[in-house]
Length: 448
Image (cartoon, rainbow, N blue to C red; front, side):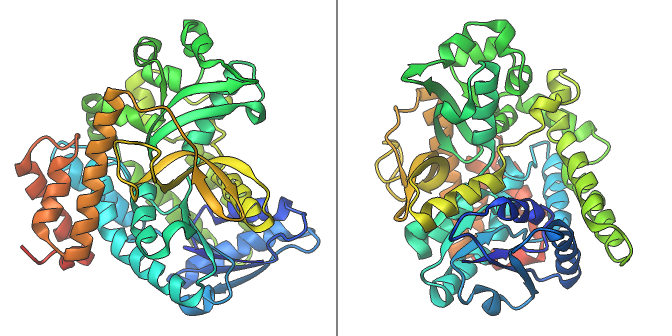
């Protein structure tokens, strides 16, 4: 099988390749094509992959190219991990929002909307080209904002595009291990949108173990989300939120912490990764060790401002493991290519799963996956507090999609103004003006 990675010069690509190297089953990926618009980044990541493959028999062959059509032709799977505007764009998203006193995080609030407005037109163009050049390919989308971008691409690819995220899987594993349960035996009841979901149950052998966790303050406060949100709040909710809901539940504190930080997360990652790619221009520099050190630092500093707000200090080693989005991607490819039925939490079209949303809305829920793709399973209705957030944020996503399609500035203003974390229409208008100044690519918002 051939896997094409869009954004193949991206920093996280070696995680995906590492998972492929470990897969020795029949029908595995044998060829990987990396596509990126930046030739230097492609060269650097290709060096890391070559280090990884050293000594591995029959390692998937790697081809790097800056020609998109060449990369897409013949692909069985397309992994989309693009970053429109790069980390410089992310840093600008954060700063414009914080200057207005609102959150600028990559996928949440004003920053997520700005990122979506930049990314959706590019993602739609990619979807159209995939439909033309690789009509039988399955597209796995990790491009953020993942739910929004998956919905944009689904309008051209239907159910052949599936969004993935490692947050729900990582959360489920942490809960299971806290309860002394093998994560592989647990069925996670999770529902919402990408970066806006809740674990409402964790079932083992037909028994829901989550009430046991919620009833024990010591256990509840012993893992990442318990420390981040506080045991009283989790007991009040009767559920465990995705970590990104900290931006909603503790928004004022999060904004203040980000304003007071020496630099934003995007600026930190920009500087860190620029250093890595600069080192890779030295042919004698050891590629994989340099990449791995940079990755470890990235993981250790993840959501550090939020942990500071919660007063929980550094991340525990047990919390550093994510859900492993590369493992989610590999499991998804295996299930589809080999018809190996499995259950995964994915971003897919709603159909009738959540009654408060329409059939085409992309949601994040457990799915059954096989050769026919991913189908959401039936879940319990969302509680009212979750309905309010999910429907409000979905309305924002739809406004972003409409603005990207129409070029309407007024619709872009509406997207910002409707978000629960933007507190004024006047602020929304200034945000649009600010983002258009720093992002020339938003010049398409030129209609009333």
